[in-house]
Image (cartoon, rainbow, N blue to C red; front, side, top):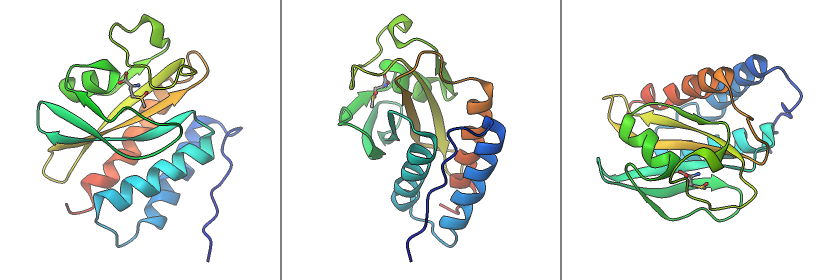
Length: 164
Ligand code: SME
């Protein structure tokens, strides 16, 4: 049976994220494999919200290196060092980074020249270890605000409760 993806592009953000959280929980019930979770979440978030690029960079060398994981959108760059670009900054700081205008973020890595703004959220497991970052890019300037931060950080907690 095909699971449908809701169209949340015109919903108020708090409603959209509440729905996305519930949808992700339901779709991932009983699943503890982080790659299966990342794949499902990137598809759900990307298509329901109409983003330019949505996906995960996984921690492959703690404190040093991120490598691309499941994503939706045009080709993402393969590896990002901690401290490099927005993803590397979020990984190094261990906190969400919202960038209203990527041209004003020193060291921003351009994978798709249409990207104008982005948000990157750390992903932790049940032990509190950083396992990945979730990167969401938009072709619009200033697309992300505190509602996105709160909504995506809540969705990120699904990895903490997944038992891995
Ligand atoms: N936006 C990122 C690079 C990855 S891609 O955009 C998919 C950054 O500067 O961290």
